[in-house]
Amino acid sequence: MILSPSMLSADFSVLGQQIAEIEKAGATWLHIDVMDGIFVPNISFGACVYKSIRAKSNLFFDVHLMITDPERYIEDFVSAGADMITFHVEATKNPELCIEKIHQLGKKAGISLNPGTSVDAVIPYLDKVDMVLVMSVNPGYGGQKYIEDVNPKISKLRELCGEDFLIEVDGGINKSNIKSVVDLGANVIVAGSAVFNDNITASVHGLLEEV
Ligand code: DX5
Ligand code: ZN
Image (cartoon, rainbow, N blue to C red; front, side, top):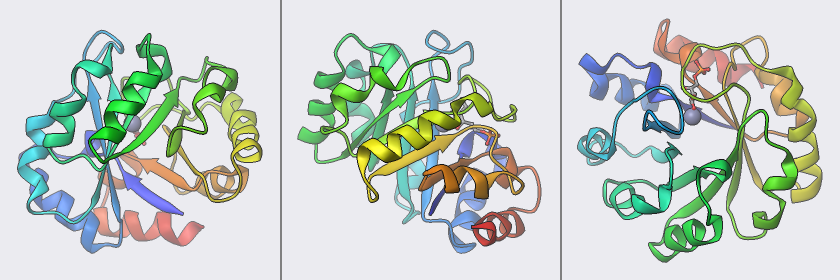
């Protein structure tokens, strides 16, 4: 399992230090939540915020775009240092174009679906993307409760995609439910508040030890 701590819950006044700490504690990915105030009600941060960290970090930059018409910004997010860009199937009229643009720039492409969106919406793209991101909360905020109704979607995607495909689950995951989400078929786990709201090193170790 890959743990992708979500920077959204970090203390931005000491962002560089906290990101160095998750890396030292054993995390290999960093989940970067970009929100535009249109696709989701909240605004988070843009490419310039993680660009400054890129040179100081070896983490895999897992950029989750919660923005409308993501095709407009793919170049910017790649030049800022993204290793993977995941966009929402609900946010664009042309998922294929988004995937193509990301791949042309030599990066991995992920497609995400909201809790209320059926797996059928992403099926046409499964053989083109490198990862599916199943939202287990309605996107916009950290610290929400995991929505159990998404569980059948995780199992169905694992069945459809085979054992090595990347299936990431995002929202409301902590020490007490991480194992059950992995058992359903997730192999990339996002955790925001469960990493940053307490001692970071101990939290990363605790989550990694559960699975
Ligand atoms: C929600 C974001 C998540 C969020 C997860 O819109 O996509 O990545 O930061 O935070 P927790 O783990 O606190 O639910
Ligand atoms: Zn996210």
